[in-house]
Image 1 (tube, rainbow, N blue to C red):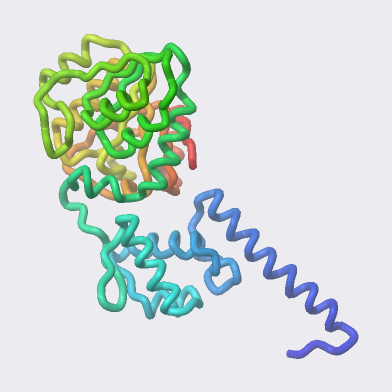
Image 2 (cartoon, rainbow, N blue to C red):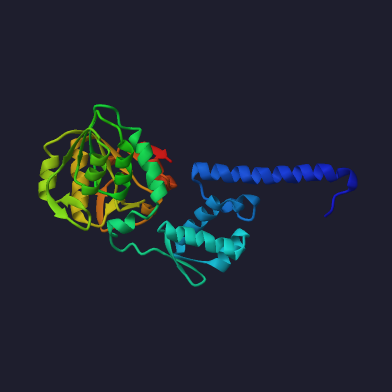
Length: 297
């Protein structure tokens, strides 16, 4: 209804304030990593980050999403949704199909070259935050993985540290950056992982005590904890728990809400979690109860 002339200015002011409140709630939802369903249909949903968060939630529930339904639900154009789906495909979350998208298949572990492209920017932010935890003089272990590799690249210029790793890529990255003293733990070479694994590796880890171990896993399931596709990788990470004062878990959003065949660690076996992803409320409470520090980037 059109306002009376003498109240038009007041109506415009109130309407503008309402829109600003919607946008403010949207930004808070992003910072606090909360679902954005209550913002659907408001000006805040124009923010790409909120749309992507909502699309990923729907994808996780149903395994597929449809352009037409998303456009109607989020009150944006179909072209906008298509661009969002293309972005999520590039990040490795889904595969675009005619009229929508389907969840990326994760029935088995992916090659390193494929995993490097998934959430590359998010992994870089996680790696940068992890590097802040490393103090001069520390003896640390860096596990094999694409997120831990991103972390290793942020250690450039650190001269006063000792680094052990079972990853060829991590060792190469550290060597190029002249980072302290670097040792490669022995074992059987697994070319598909570009890492050394097996009983020899576990035995070698057992001869050391580390200030911190920086590790990643294939998936994070809210019921079963941190999981891996291969038992050999899981065994390495369990061995590191026994030989490290602190376990720092690096996990980007592509890892959460998924299962894998091997349960690697429980929530209580790590000391810190660095992620860019919203964490399930119950799982987050379990981590906090165990004294685990959660860092969002």
